[in-house]
Length: 318
Image (cartoon, rainbow, N blue to C red; front, side):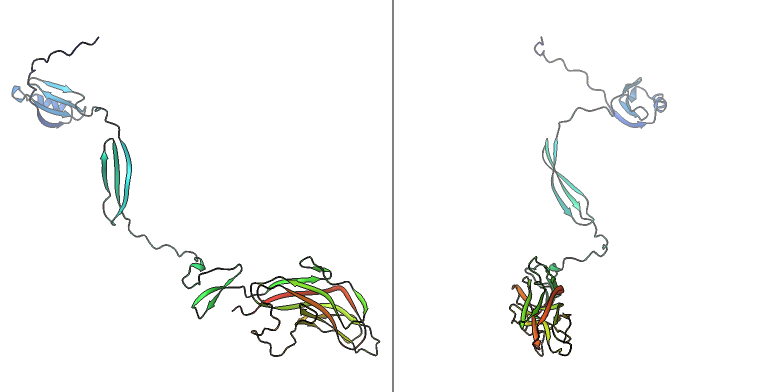
């Protein structure tokens, strides 16, 4: 068992005097010095660089302390270091690090010098048009295009001004799966006959139809008559609605194709006219009508090779 602590012992001898003389290269240099030393030089000390030892002159010889330099010290106390603030200092300043807190919990704060401005980079790609200061803010409908507004001095989204479509009926097939042209008929006596109806969905802008295609039709006349002409017409809505396309028939007594061309039946039609215009947001139905506009003879209609094509031309978009 461990006993109790004993009494304090007597005071020991005084420590030897110590006078630092510096470094010597090696043992040979130290021996050359030792040959000149006597009792009067007691207490002088050197470090031998070749061995790292501390040597002490005791008056008659050298005492050597091999671990006086470079020996491992005692283990230090563990410490926790965290990063605190990181700030940017002026260009060209030094890196500044300050330590705050109390061991073992220390915090490092940095002030990092700002770098010098770099070289100008290569020109980048175009940015988003809608973020431009001369572009009008607001909703941007699908398929809208930028148009310049002189009054506002800005670009603004405008419904697509180009042709829309096409919507078609070919023979007995319609673009929307609906009924196409009616079946072929012979010896028709009625002055007018509806042979197809084309449906067109609503658009985001007002528009005027551009109709193409044609209907196969021919009058029943003797070769010495040739007075009957059956035209093919396209009208908005009902068979008596606004005329928007005309296919002139032939006064020949033979079956031929009356080819549609845009035709509105009015003079001095201008882009701002309301004739034939379908308002924005409104769907439209176009009636394809056979009309006997000259003569009295009966006529034949053939579904095969009959076709109607509609393109929408926006109006008032600019």
